[in-house]
Image 1 (tube, one colour):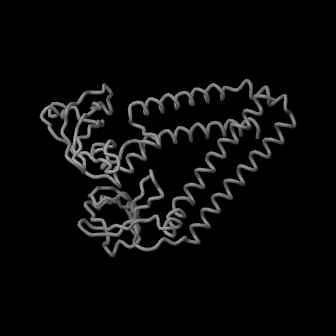
Image 2: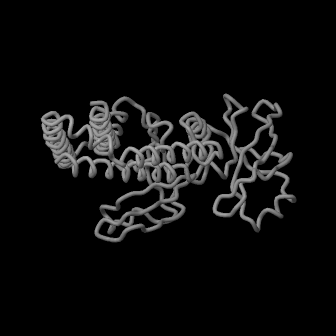
Length: 318
């Protein structure tokens, strides 16, 4: 029964994993804002719209706004947010206009900025739709697993041989090994940040101060991203107390821009006043990194792997 138990455990873990993500997508994103608004974790700011990009047309177009506003230390930063314009005829989202935003401190280290036109309220329709999604998913999982368990334990020896001789284990192990190797490689190159790094970056963006730093040296790390080199910069700057602080950070430099690096003397960095040793290039903090997209690719790979396992399991058992 070893392979049978392992197979049922694998399928169960996959179903619970996607149940967690479904609940997180349906409820946490909206209910957390409502809860945090009640306990005072939302900081209000006024933001100026620098640019507007229409991502999807329709009666309620999807817009991407580039905003300029002061962080929690009073220093201007740029961030992008996406909004559904439910009232496009009001022309609320135009360049140079000011809109109210909220910074959700409880979302650290995730992106905390959201449009805050009025107090968040929980929609009954939204709750109903999310509840239906969960009921359908849980019911489907229950029907699949209950019928599968009944059939497996009716003929345990037959299914033990089938599970033991299946190629799904080899393909599953191969996919998991590839994901682990890719994850470690991305972590090593710095393209995929861990939670600690994301927390530090969050602190720098929303509590940091900007300063012009002197470039002491730089080097090519030997890593290419889209055929462009990843360069590490070494710099020094003075903090608010006049102390000389040294730091380093990496950024992707275009192949045609490498030659101009030798003429650069200063570069803008952000540092944390309470911990000046923590600093990053301001350019890296202003722009959205590719870590989010790499995480999405890894999650998509997990979805394809999960769908393959569930399909295989359903085909054999049901």
